Length: 163
Image (cartoon, rainbow, N blue to C red; front, top):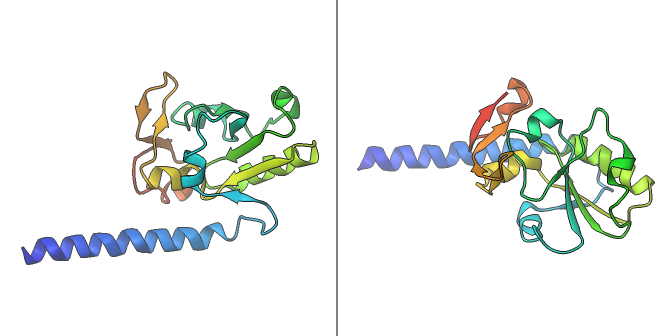
């Protein structure tokens, strides 16, 4: 019994340490003046009218998993015309793996006249680490998540990282 308690205690501290380190790392990639939304608040908005989730990762990442209802817009070849049908006053939640690429796309959206753009704080990695639901291309729930690279995939500690 004592060993089980020790194992659970160590596991808890390890998960907390990763989470604290992850939050610290994120501070290097977020602009203080760009609005963010928590994963809990974003999750509550899935399927709501006039709310759009834009996945700014590349297609191969999106095809592993994404947030239900998300539209893949990419990063490398992002074209503002890909979102031209979205109302300028719609709530737009952008996300990527950790939030750096999505913040850049979010800034482009604001420059193009979109007025309610928020970056998903912590990105899809934070979403997965909290066991929030992700979908595969067929719409089925999955725990797989594209890790982008080994250097970045280390930040995913819940789910199955693929490359």
